[in-house]
Amino acid sequence: MKILVLGADGYLGWPTSVDLALDKHELLLIDNYAKRSIMSENNRAPLILNKKIESKIKILKKINKKVSFKNIDCSNFNKFSDAFKKFKPDAVIHFAELPSAPYSMLGAKEGWKTLQNNIQSTYNLVWNVKTHRPNCHIVKLGTMGEYGTPNINIEEGWLNVKHQGRNQKFLYPRQASSLYHTSKIMDTDLIWFYLRLYSLRATDLMQGPVYGVYANDFSKENKLEPTFAYDDMFGTVLNRFIVQSVANVPLTVYGSGNQIRGYLNIRDTIQCIKLALKNPPKKGVLNIFNQFTEQFSVKELANKVASALKKIELNVKIKAIKNPRIEKEKHYYNAKNTGMKKLGLKPTLLTDKVIIEMAQYVISNKKHINNKIISPKSTWK
Image 1 (tube, rainbow, N blue to C red):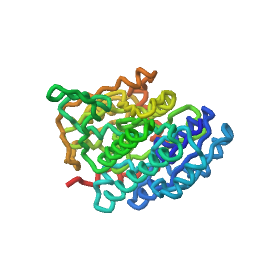
Image 2: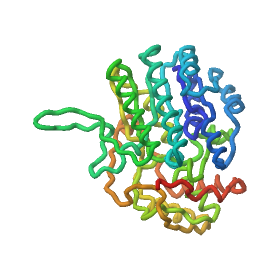
Image 3: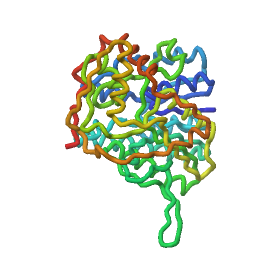
Image 4: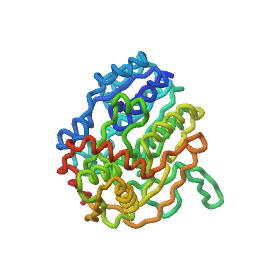
């Protein structure tokens, strides 16, 4: 296939690109390094500052010559359209968004930048598919955060409603708790609008927080790790907990720690992307999958980390701090996630071995840890 990967430099975009290159797809990777710039502006940095794609792509070209890269801002309509029309993709994987709830809630400038980048990038993509490649399959990374924490079971994207004797299937109601997650709701609505009008095809992957380092053995052998963030803005919770453990910093549990979410290993993210590509929907259909494998409360997650790392003699402490977010700390949470399993997903579960392997990676790079960027600086209040 000819696949366009938007946001190819990111924590998920890069390992996805590597894996698709191994599968011999023809790839055009696009990124403008916006996340790197934002992290730098806010004095944040990943555990290892990876080389840019221009340098790393040389390794991919040794296994697949049909891989290229363009430094393009996907929210720039003209530049994005030119690249899209020239490449003529069969599928587009859309990671080109600013993935940080804390950043989006930092201030007016950051909030608008999140909305503008995320919504305009999605609009530009959908408009170009509609106009130039209506059979192209859009694979968009959504987030379980779109659903919020409703007091009913979370279905996989859709809800059948019976009202006054009549029935209708609607998108499952969304109620996000950050501006970032609200922008993702708008993305879903944009895609569904264009699908209804123009019979396009798309898959929306409602993903929970991701953890892990290497998505495949090739990446590990060639040191093609993703951008492993552990800071308060861009670090996902388990990755942060692992770094805190190695740095001998108490695990920061927000509030009660009873907040429940669905989690996913980075290897399974790639599995799900590939399964989505192999199973495109019919024209006019929006496939939605809840992309996670296990559910934990934050407190349960912290305890799992502490228990596992005792085996390598790390004495992990846990500290509850005042919640910087405005969110329900005690709530019902039961989300369905059978769709991807039916397509063939084989989950990588969060075992002690997985936690220890992550810790060993962090230990080998311990000298790069900056304790000053771990504690939350952004507050919803």
